[in-house]
Length: 467
Image (cartoon, rainbow, N blue to C red; front, side, top):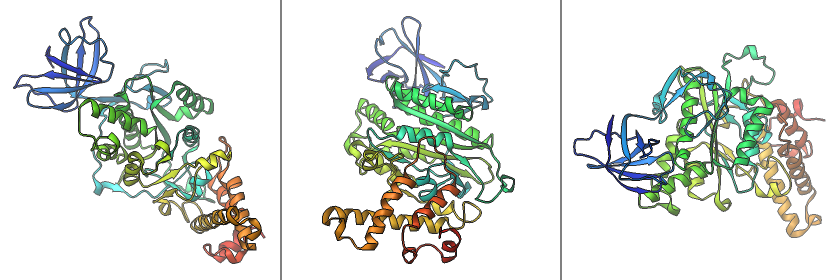
């Protein structure tokens, strides 16, 4: 450890320490700033030049006296102490427990920045995860090891949807199979990371997890809107480090839910502005894509390992703009998106998932015989197609009037209305099995003439379609 009383400047969450030529300071190294009254604030090295270090503070720099303060470089990066005792516990953005529980004795300590997964060692995601939400399980299937973001907007109920997924998500056997037939019986856990949320939202998540018992298999990291901005940068890395420990050392299937990635990116922009960096699109730093990739690419499966890390990042699109840099870059890195609809929300439909622009690029790998049911692929495509035609019929009815529609268009219009009321809509406590979801899809397809069901096999029509 080396100490210096050469703090030369403070700018927002950053401070600059002048260094001698022979200083051996490392990138990401932790720093303690000792104030004149003996109190200590923590930070880390953000940038190093020949004779100075830029330190990113984890706490406020208000009241810091440059002349009497001392910077001590600790010679180590930020690590997280880990144990299975973390399950059922709640931590803040500095990884301190805030639930008045007993002290956790770490079994391991890992660098929060993680290590890149060798692409050759990656195993392909191909196991179905049931969320209990029909529009995800039936049409935009989540696969173990996938990264599937939720694109939301201001005022939409993404917090409720996130809590419902966290409560209900599980790895299940295919329809008709007993759990004993599954070779993989690894336990399931949820790691929840919240960045820049309000006190009200934090209490909502805590109460939801506790009241349903989901907290017993969950680890929560919560950074409030009035907490230090820099903690928002560390929360997703803390969450993913805990997830990697549970997945690869304790052989668990871990679902990581991160909300709200927009607040994370705003924190990056604030720190970039304090560093006086040249801004990129809409003022965000030019390395936003790379930074987001270091988070999203930590999802996956490793060949030879039983555990897995699956990610559901949630982001609020400013002004519902899907071309905004945060949503745009997230879409490039991840494997699809679940898009929330303001129109469905205004109709009172929950969860307001807009089926048509939503996409899971890996859904074909997680459905079918031995995974869900043999008719899943066909009914998925038929529901998509029929709902799209139903929405077109609805637009025609608005322009020309319903009386101008053909009989088949009226059938599709009725299908679209019932699809939204029955398939898309469900209560926040309703946990539908994949069997219930597929059976409901067949029930809705019965509205249409059999001649219109061109995307499902005839043997599946005979077997599953109500007469």
